[in-house]
Image (tube, rainbow, N blue to C red; front, side):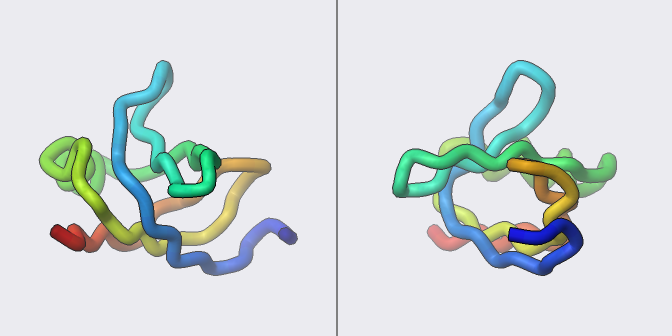
Length: 71
């Protein structure tokens, strides 16, 4: 996947060693790069099913634009 592409990925939010991560159903993990308000939204959505929309900025990093709770 090339960098800068837009993605919509579903999974569950967890706290990783350097911030929040998105665990995907197939065993993958995305590191989430986000601002203060998005970080507060991610904290309230921890361990819940979500869909994260954003732009790929690294090998497994996603710059978050939007978080939608699916529960």
